[in-house]
Length: 132
Image 1 (cartoon, rainbow, N blue to C red):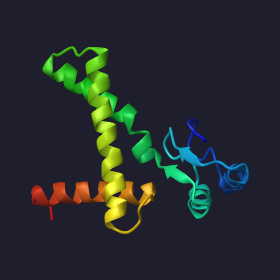
Image 2: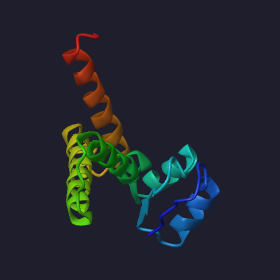
Image 3: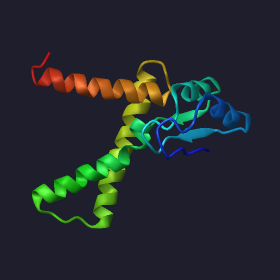
Image 4: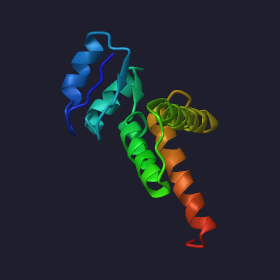
């Protein structure tokens, strides 16, 4: 398993091919786009389970959102309460990406699932607000 977490474009296509040649079975991005599009393509063509940063790295953003909620409501959650809320958020992100990919006959394609699920969420919000 590889977990690129440093910076954008950390892994390119050549480096991804090296990971594939060394039998990597899964890659989970832990930063904002640490894999180039070429690297993602290499992983997907090789059948490597790939978790895109927009889904797998969402915990940091979610935790910041939880912190802002606490502050605005003048609450103080325990570490356990924050962990429980964060786990629920991350489980929901996985579920949405997985089920969306499956719905559109792309089961296991977390890039597709996360992209389409995210698009649909924004589109539904825009429709609900009368923007479109």
